[in-house]
Length: 286
Image (cartoon, rainbow, N blue to C red; front, side, top):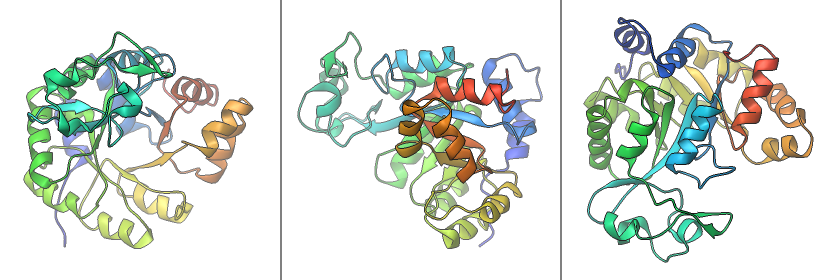
């Protein structure tokens, strides 16, 4: 099935037809024009010194020169999109239950924890997160609400804030890309593929700004197939490579790029360190 879901060139051309003035615009230009530059995605935003998925963590990612803040989006009992990674809120607030068990007003009574200790921060709405990021950084939306209709509602919110050109909307199930791409051709979608066959199937749907591959089936040949369409390859340094980097500076990232040299976007829990590493290699915009 050949369905044009998203044209990276057309969207960027439309967005950049006016003078580029914002930092987010310069990231988009780098995304489009410099495929050999690697973009850095901060997992749950830059959360070393701030609660994950919080407004301060987004601002810290901006300060560090990070390109993309990865944010997890769920929906409250009263239908508001908020940031939360886990199925329950226990680890991040100390309270029982899930986001969907509470209204927004109820959730915002709970302090966010950082290293197990309460902070002054509260669970932010996705709208507030988008506005905090606007003009400064791209957002990867890790959407954790079931159902196509919920995703469409989230699309509408993203458009309302004017953030659609600065978003990657991550989909766990690559066939959903066909449905959502037909619904909204101007929302940048990034499907996750599960193997070589599903990667080629997804490439047949049309063009995407990026595809999320996995280390279990990555190959340079497959990555080159993705890059040939104008898409970037997204890979994660989370876990093994980040831990190796923490143990010995440079070792983890060296190992990562030796393993996945065609990667165009790297998600990491060490975004500041990766920005510094890439700049020393001439692989990141200054």
